[in-house]
Image (tube, rainbow, N blue to C red; front, top):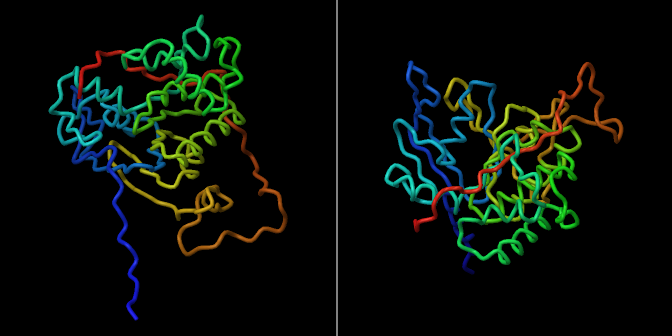
Length: 295
């Protein structure tokens, strides 16, 4: 009887890759130091570190908003150093969606038109742009708020409009810079749950954050310090769509360990902690304001 061998796993396409990427500024400032990072299609990861660690520069380089001083950055297979500014803008608009901490929604326009603005440079007609915007708003749970303007939306809803605008062009990579940084705890939890759901449906999501609790909730954590990657951690993969098991400190349980025993159904009490103050602000995205030449 012939034994059946398992089929070899098919490697997932690479969405963005950095090889020995460094970024320096005048005055001897080294924001990135020989960074190596590969993000595959369908991943959900955090780039985490304190202020000044280089994670914002990392966002700019990954998103082609800035070019590395040395090293190689590839997005969707393209070496960004070989592209003109116009072609780089086209690559960015087609393949990358951005969500920033402070959103920029047009005050006098409703949610549909704010999201449809993300397709301005695709050449699509207004009717198509609005239809795609409605579908994107449905996807983030705002199908019932399509006619509302920003001043009629909560901070969390504005954030979800910004995410819809980032997703409306169906990019291969969603970069979220401190997506809960300007939201209250409840709204932030809703936004993170949405990012998990979007990833489960196939979107590659990279969250840039200083928040250790948010980082611990994601299956991969790339830790930055002084412009360098100091750790690249992965949690066990769950097949039920839930987050990895947690310890009382809020970090994922490492492979081969069991979570501590609980004596009741409620979460452990915390002492001396309070959530940081939030403002009623959300995040912004870049909508591809550059020309749209073929890439």
